[in-house]
Amino acid sequence: MEIKRDYYLNKLIEAKGDGLIKIVTGIRRCGKSYLLNTIFNQYLLENGVSKEHIIKVPLDDSDYQYLLNPQNLSKYIKEKIVDKDIYYVILDEIQLVDNFTGVLNGLLRIQNVDIYVTGSNSKFLSSDIVTEFRGRGEEIRMYPLSYSEFMSVYDGDKLDGWIEYITYGGLPLVVSMTGDERKMAYLEEQRKNVYINDVVDRNDIRNDSELNTLVEIISSSIGSLTNPLKLSNTFKSVAGINIDSKTIDFYLKCLEEAFLIEKAKRYDVKGKKYISTPNKFYFSDLGLRNSFINFRQPEETHIMENVIYLELKRRGYNVDVGLIEFRERQGEEFLYKQIEIDFIANKGNNKIYIQSAFNMLTEDKINQEQRSLLKINDSFKKIIIVKDYIKRTRDENGIITMSIFDFLLDQDSLNY
Image 1 (cartoon, rainbow, N blue to C red):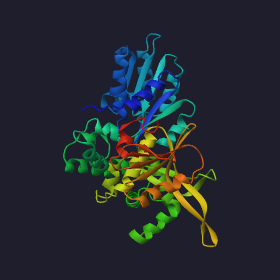
Image 2 (cartoon, helix red, strand yellow):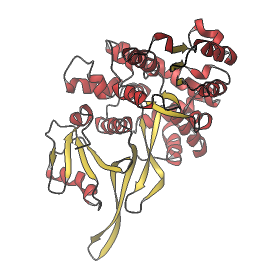
Image 3 (cartoon, helix red, strand yellow):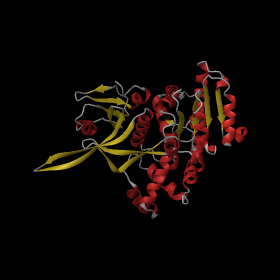
Image 4 (cartoon, rainbow, N blue to C red):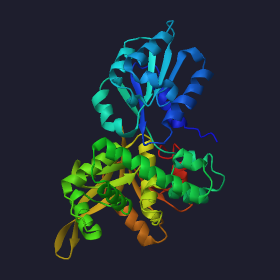
């Protein structure tokens, strides 16, 4: 089963030959190696690049173990560069090489070399990109399969596909499996022995049970506002564990570094400033999220929010949670109130306000979902995304309403 990842392929094509190291990052098993070694490799071959000018080194392959020595790797690559045509160097799992930055810096000095690397696990996470490649590399963040990518290989209708997708997520290998038991068993195995172990090893965490409990708590409340102090109180009340807020804050950062979760900050729309706390957390893959709570809480409303967040991030938007403060008259007094906008999506000068609504079957529900959007005074696009099969509409206030399926399956759904 071949799954096209055209969005990421186009990112690589746009960056081709720009003189920077292309660093493909993302949660384990999301398809980084396949993207470079198969999809991008095939693109190069189909566009006239000879095999001899594509130098691929899978550093996690035992046949290439001697190249984990940086001198050997550098020599191996340089010996293959025999003319002045462009050579595409693809290094998979670069973090396995000692002093890999020295190797890459040396290759950058060769004018006819274009470098692509992947890195994951406990030794190469997002903070390393900032510290090790500042000014010399660009990160291409890869996510598990989007709903659109998932549906391109799913044999069924959109609704059945939706249920499958929000239950087992978008890790490519899971999508290729048949049978609920196999999928659940694989996700549980990966969660126990890969994802959490990576975080523990990377950060020298001694009490992995606390870390697991924290992820379970976040899994049970995706899309809810929280902070380390609130989570500390939850530990005490639910698990009977005393753990201070500083430790929880450290654990949260570790989970973000491992690409397991992402934090959405709150933004005061009228005050034009960020609010430090509380925040929301979303999971990079819903199958993994569900495995942490034994697939027992569908909570489709919050899961839909998570899917929208991931899709916005995948499309290259910076995503915040919006806050509107206003005064409202009650009797003889004016009271200050706060209402939330689910997402503020920013890309360059483009801004979009988005509400996630599972349904809007009544007038009261419509008014509730529109209320925060109507409080915004600027002219940027305002959208409500609903689960219902509906035709895209725009009302007299300029608010657009569209189906979740139209949003996810049409890559240009936010552009018109």
